[in-house]
Image (cartoon, rainbow, N blue to C red; front, side, top):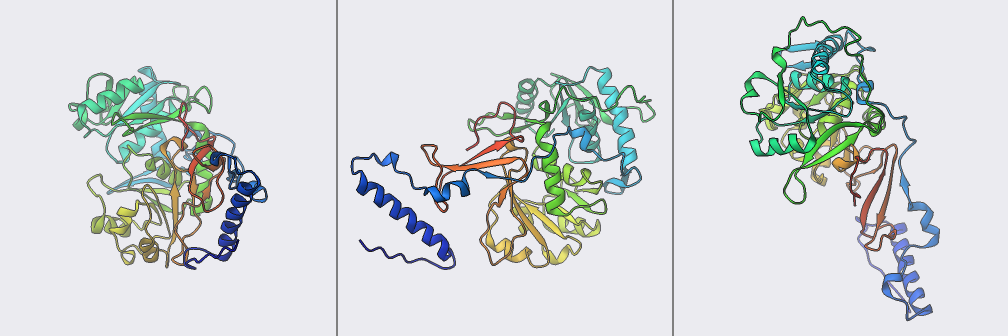
Length: 411
């Protein structure tokens, strides 16, 4: 038997085609050796390739740390942590304000294994609320106050939230199923003795750091319980890949209700950078690029849709862009890769925001999701849960410290 294969050199390189021919030859050899063998038992993977792809692992595992431990106020007290319009807050100010708020929450019963809802639009106040919640040892639950009341009620009851943080202007539109604390009414001079709040640790790094509600396959919002244990690895990965430093200016554009906001928290606060907050009424386009230019943003996470809405020439200070949440089209890479570092990230909410990330994308190469991050192990399996060869489609299975508690298999 003689086989000839024709392929497009823009999509395949000769080694990949040679591997494919080897797989075909292996199948034909197996069929000839045992014609009665069921097709389901045919193995496409050559033994020489098995160790190359089973499993694919990220870099070394970072020692788990809690979310509160990753906040860097002690190392950068005088650095501006948050810029919201004309308002600026140093790390020391964010630390002090969140201490006072955390003390209030502790007095009301918040602590490890509890859930505190945060129903505050993207703002300096939403950042303070998250810092305060994690300092009590509780998990935070982001809630968009504009959601329908029934959706919010489901999230509160399903998560078991005991308290909620909001602003006076949103209080009346929120369900009364939990006690809501109006952040803007907490006394700014309230004493917060160190014994009141010294970053009360959760019972372990396996405790829940935050709960994110996704749409769910049935249409009913599904809570994903994300533990602390995968956050440090993600923070280290972001620091190294994005090359973010305490001098960087990181955009906060993601809705607090989506886990990309957690990526932004770690990207900025994990190294003592400054977070530049985009008003919740801005969704992209010229208004977004104007803010990025005025605030001299250097690092940002933007979905491909948002990234496509702005002109690279309008944001001259941006050096590194992360994108994800949607397929990144090659045209977008051609537009942004020249003059910028562009990284594509992938990961379900159940895997602590991101499981995979590329190195710098270039217009000359296909757009992929890259490889696994620190502490992540992955397999691509077929319907029989057998590894598939390189170039053969299958389901991606993810393992590692970052998997959500009680998460079903992600594949």
